[in-house]
Length: 79
Image (cartoon, rainbow, N blue to C red):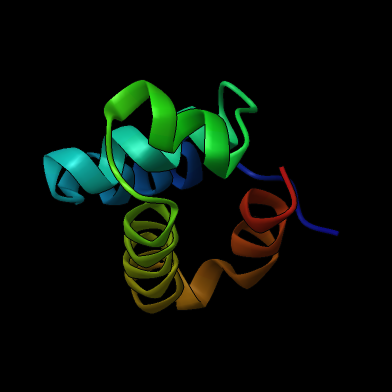
């Protein structure tokens, strides 16, 4: 396995930062803070369906932008 450098971290952060604000907030609450979809929905006063939709948007953008970093995407998906 090749070592992941700072460039990889920068690329990942750049893609996350480019997500629409609400989408980014939901993604970070889920993947960084470890919150469940129901918790996020209640906290943000939105439906679970909205949380699911926004996570789908985030995954699609991450998948497209990080296609050369596929192992990194898999890592993010299972966080």
